[in-house]
Structure formats: structure tokens, C-alpha cells
Length: 221
Length: 76
Figure 1: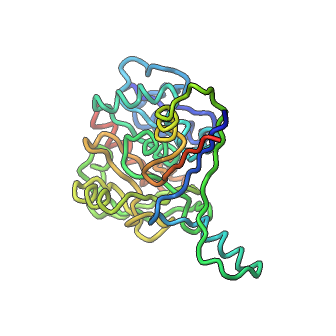
Figure 2: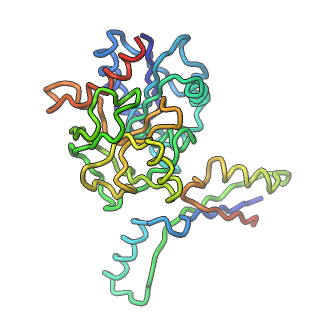
Figure 3: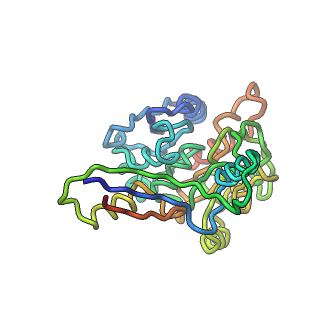
């Protein structure tokens, strides 16, 4: 299985993501620099990692969303290749227009860094089929701009279409309807603020993130 | 030519930063401020032949996130 992690200047969870992908797929991912224009041939899974790409200049994820490699990522997403964006990766996906809404400064203005309970709202997706519907899992968050915003019409639409993958079990950052993770229309792109790659080993304090990778990568075998 | 771009949050989008500034102003003893909203000011130096349509595209594609922000362009 060929996976890829996109690396931007300022990414800082790229190696954690690589560890998670290698552990589950048995093969180290390609680390693809933002200036590349093509993904490696046959890439079957793409991860956009957390961090502070381009120093969060202009808006979180704004510059990364316009970097050369994102055109290839968008093309691949359009062909149905699974794309997982975590934290800054979620911000990049919304800025690139691959997911609806925007991620704004946390309502409390504080950087939030702790493990939070997440409710699995949709367990029918490629990424979430390893969980039961309504299951509450513990996944760490670490972000300043995780306050999900979309207009009421968009929120109603994505809720109605089952595109809210995860919801915070209790308010964390002011997100509209406590939304923590969103799927695209075809279900092959997931953006989420919590970090599943930080919960794949008992030494992390929990392994609830592992099933996300097992489900998504297992479906591709 | 200088072009000034003002990026502001759309009405109805909560602005926690503006709220914090408002609280800080009150803390300093300034009264009579009923609301504060923070935005972004960007100054561009552009060639004269850059069209209004080009400037608009720059704002729509990068300088503002139109999901949450409005923009206003002024040629100086």
C-alpha cells in the first residue's frame, strides 16, 4: 500500500503521521514536500499533517492550500483517493475548498491541548467504520484555530448528509454544533481537528486513533 | 500604485478576538464602546495595468476567506 504524507514548512506532526501509517500499512509513507507538483505514482492514501504550515501566515492553512502539491492532492481527491487532514491538515482542506466551512480562532482564545472525548457520529465512512455509531473515543487535540464555522444552511446540509464524522462530547473550542470532523460529499476526504495519530500506542495513553487508520487503510487492501 | 485591501469578518460571524479587545478596552476604563471587530489590512504595490477584476480575484482566491470574511478594495 502506497501512502503519502504532505510536508509543508512548519508541519510538525508529519513524522507522527508517518509512524501511524507505517505501523498500520507495514510500509513507510512517501514524505512529499509542498513544492512537488506530482504525488508518487500509485499513491493510494494521502495525509495532510498537523502543524503550523507557513507559520499560519494570513490564515491557518491558507498558504499551504495554494501550494503546488495541493493541485495534485485535489485531483487525487476528485478521483476518489482517500485524503485525511488532521488539525492544520483540516484547516488546509477547508482553505482549499475540499471541505466546507472554516476553522476560526478558538472561542476562548486559548490554545487547547488535552485529550478530549469524541462522539463517532457516522461510522459508515471509509475512515470511521472501525467504530460503532455513537461510540465515544478519546483523542488528543492541540490547536488554537479549531473553532469550526459554517453558515446554518451548510451545517444543516452536512448534518443531513451524514458528513459530520466526529463531534466533541463536550464543548472544546466553540465549534458550531461541536463539530470536530467533517467528510466531503463523496466520503473520501476527512478533516478533523483531533489527532488520531497521537493515540495509536498504549504509551500515548490510549489507542482509540488506531482504528481510524486500520479502517481506512484496511479498506484499500 | 498602492492598493489597500480591508478584510473584515462577515456580520454574524463571532469574533472572539474582537470581544477580547473590547474587554481589554473596558479594563482600561474606556466606556461607550459597544462592540469591537478585528480585521486585517493588506497593502499591495501593483502595476497600473492590474485590473479591478485581477484585484478582486486576488481577494477572492487568497487574501480573504469568503466563507467567513468580506473584503473591500481601495486604490490609493
